Length: 516
Image (cartoon, rainbow, N blue to C red; front, top):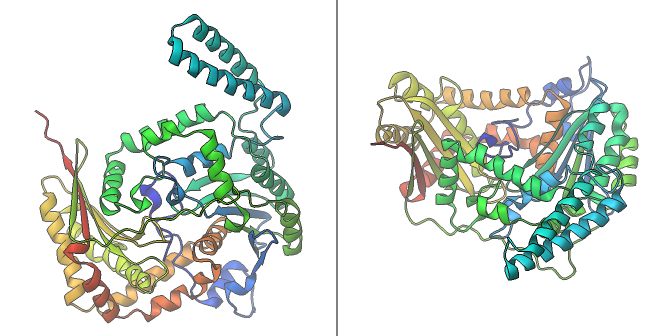
């Protein structure tokens, strides 16, 4: 399993192939701790892991190559946890977590909060008045004026983007967040002397969040959807494709949410989602850089230790419906004036199972580099496509997912011809054993991607936190290349034969609309 091609999604969770995971222990040690005459040992031995009494898992990796440190906080909470009709809640919560706390983002919280309560009362009264007397009634007009006056007073007390300002003034970079199907992540990199500042800000965000400016921010998210989906046919095609594959499982819903659902999101549900899923036992904190582990443990315990489980008492656990078995090929079409594209996907086991390693190798064989099979055949030799790609593990890791192949046809090339050419290459994997040379090349590419993906505190923190949160143990990365090395031609042939079949296939076509 690798971090996937999240460029298809609103909130990317990683690079296309950030890190195909551990290789030579000797090489890795030199990469992390440049020096000479040092013993070789595993990265796993350099990571300190502890669990706070409230259930938060903490990973620390000391790496003093520069006086900086990168922080990742992962919450096991994402789009799969949303209720039907509430899509986009996880992403909306991510936005609201930047709106400050009872002490950050406000000039006078007590007054601000009092005004907020008054505004909610006026809104309720306004809805009732409109229902009884109409929007143009005198009473409705007076309530509108009162509401506007209270909002102006409240807004005058809000200090926008104060979290960003606090970090920037202390040399912070890469302040960001990302929502996925299974995780929501918050990250920043800072000078080493800002460790306690980070602990104070981030723990305060979790202990005392204030979801300010909810309605304006909801409008921001609506506009984000218009810009990233409605105006982009490739994103519309991906939404259509995933919805065609997943009828029951929430992988079939967009992370950013459906427009109608976003418009109905309210602070009460976002607060419930926060209390239910941003709980300590769902959290992983990872800190990589020029730090002292005892100091980190002490500060994290001090600031994050008071976090408690705030779920409603007696609340039943949410059940995520598995996708029923597929009984035949599924197809969907999107008409647009954009350039055509084809996407096809084959259902496969989750990233916890051995097949995932095999499909990582197949991924490399088919589309990694200009000498890969699909690029060489479809782009270079047959001149059918301008671009080809494959992705293993779309759209998530925890549940049954997809191996995806796709391409953009050259002008004058039909999607049917391109589709047939892709099938031909997939069939080859079933009938012709992959040569030793080609297999070794694919494994070398996977290995080199790992080395290129481990050259910074930020990337290391991203990887360690991701696998700890998703797989339950960051040490998954320590054996990854060992598993890749065991893959042989028969494994590839068996996986292709079992999964690259018509009844297991979903195809989505972006077709150019012919206008009169």
